[in-house]
Length: 432
Image 1 (cartoon, rainbow, N blue to C red):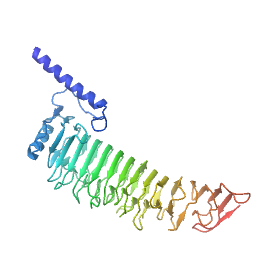
Image 2: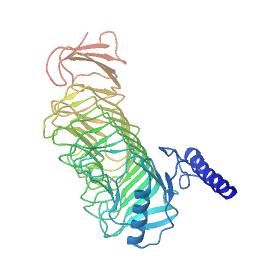
Image 3: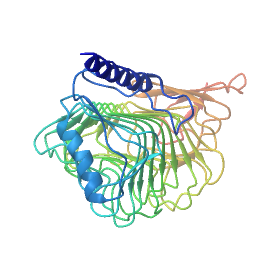
Image 4: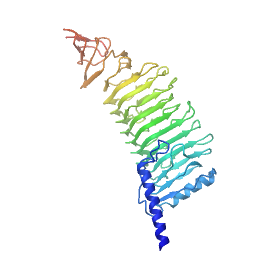
């Protein structure tokens, strides 16, 4: 009985310690911080927490050990991986409510040199609340895709979390996440590094599939996206509409193939993101258009988007609203710190509000006329008309529909108020 009490107390202390680390972290920087890992189920129940033995470097052994531990866990289990490199191939993660926790980015590695690294889910079944944290997932030379969902069209990854994760892809024409028709619902990516070592890789990094299901209510924040020959985030589907996706504080680095493309997306928010180290682009950086089903775009909001130098390729822009009919788009505070001028192409769309756009930004408007908004910093849309204000005369400078109003902040007795009385372009302004 005494031996049993000691064993029980030891198990209690181990579980309590794991819980405290998960809740509070080690406090010694990004590499060692364990993070706020969501632990589902009862930590004190038998079989819910398991530690995988130290890596051997043998693909068969390392893959088999992790697989065996997952298979022994009850629903809601946690797999703890030690420091070092686990060589794996085709690792099948099939359980919902499963946490896989490493010791930190750059400390615990899952690595493949042959085949896809990790398959998640099973066919025709939703995968719920999978958490990967404090890991580096690495497809080295000879490897395949890093994360490959298996559910198929009509099924989803729900409420999954990817925290303090690095995913590195060393192979051309291979993905970081290879979408196969499944949907992503309310998933969170936070404190991540997603990188392709080849600047001209032909594969987008995340969520690309012509048949992908809904991509709704996902959050991407505090991350780095490095090297892309095509769009890093490619949110598109054959006929479905993605909605309420949120991108915040992401650095896009050497993404010459584009940063985000959204087709028929609703209520997409992109705030406080930066673009670095562009050389010559081969796509628009942020492009929004219709999908094959012809659905429109609603509620697009872009704020504080900064490109730090670099030159866009001929005909490409920083923000491009393509063939879609856009309802209620707002672009606020776009700028560059050097290189070619920041550029916005509104395509055929009129329901777009520009706020605090510097005069150096080139805007191609709905009538395909390139204009410089000369110190115009604010506008308000009311119905079909627009109220704008800034310095200088709006004539031949500001494009707006008939009935719009312009308030000149440096005007005189009869040059302070202008009304747009004729024309569809940037002429027809009359001082009152």
